[in-house]
Amino acid sequence: MSLIWAKGTSRPDEAIQRFSAADDVQLDRVLFRFDIQASGAHVLGLEKAGVLSAAESSSLREALKSLDAAWTNGEFELDERYEDGHSAIESYLIEKLGEVGKKVHTGRSRNDQVLVASRLYLRTSLDELKALCVTIAKTTLEVAHAEMMTPMPGYTHLQRAVPSSVGLWMAAFAEAFTDNAELAELTRKWVNKNPLGTAAGYGVNAPLERDLVSGELGFDALQINPIYAQNSRGKFEIQVIDTFAQAMLDVRRLMWDLSLYTTAEFDFVRLPDAYTTGSSIMPNKRNPDIVELLRAAYGVVEGARVELTQTLSLPSGYHRDLQNTKGPMIRAIERSKEALRLIPPLIGELQFQREKMAAAISPDMYATDIATELALGGMPFRDAYKEAARQIPEIQDRDPAESLKSRTSPGATANPLLDRIEARLSGLAD
Ligand code: ARG
Image (cartoon, rainbow, N blue to C red; front, side, top):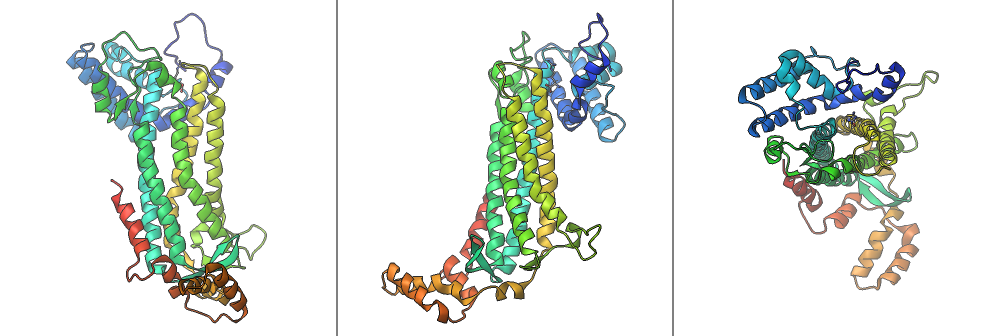
């Protein structure tokens, strides 16, 4: 492994190098393209500041482009030959351009380099999160439209409560994922600030064009204080993880619903084959493994959060401990994205056992409707409640769809509940 900071005085110990590098190069593979992108903007900034000539700047930027292409098509390998992704970029430029390549690191440190690559990665991840949440919201809303009047029991405490519908259940997740998409948008704005130009955490005595570089990279604002730029490492990762966690909480709840409703005891829903597995010993089994792994993904996210907060017990400035924020950040985000991508096809292929669900609605579940009807007729609600309770053994079966309609869209012909969720969803900027 070549070390860019080695000054030729002593040979680094193998075991120590292995320990300090750990999985760092592997993790940098996730950040690599962002690091290359930020390097290009940094070079442009150096040119505008008069530190690099136009010719030097363009050959550096061309070389960065070819590195990006080589990386994308698999010709360039980022592996243990390099200390990290940052030094791999510099080595590539030096190998390709000689003296000019050695100029790229003027006015920057790996400390602001990793910050900017991380922020670009997080920003992109939040855009992906938003798009995934919008897709999930749309998919659940479509099912909600189709199944709005498909009766199923509504539960509180897992005890039968009032008649509900498949559509109402699905629309709950449409609204949840609309909220989650909105949160991704808000967090993106919070994270989208540029740390590049703060160097090792104390600025640098070079006339850097920070605003220009920021604009070039599409940042909304600058990180102003160089010490805070370092101190914010981990903080912004936590905020992004919390944003993902909101979506993963809803995934966990939806998967819980599915694992419950797919039991033989309920048999309200059947899963698409691809989301189930068999047992190695019990020939009769069809297990909802994928649903369970999707439910468990939330644990990965929260575990990552704990790792982050444990790492952040630090004084001001850069510390190598901060390298340990990268693993949990990437693990939480990549696992969440993998999970979220599996939700729309799952929802789209659920097979609702409509008769089973309708049969699970018992007449006593109309008691609340009856109490309210009596109250609307003038009886004080407390008396109406007692009267409805008295009537429970003789309550006649009713139309669950009418009952639901009277509770979710009284007097309306269209369905304001679904329309309002739809309006919120389409109101989210692209
Ligand atoms: N891999 C390092 C990290 O993630 C990059 C910064 C290295 N800086 C240093 N001073 N050793 O923090």
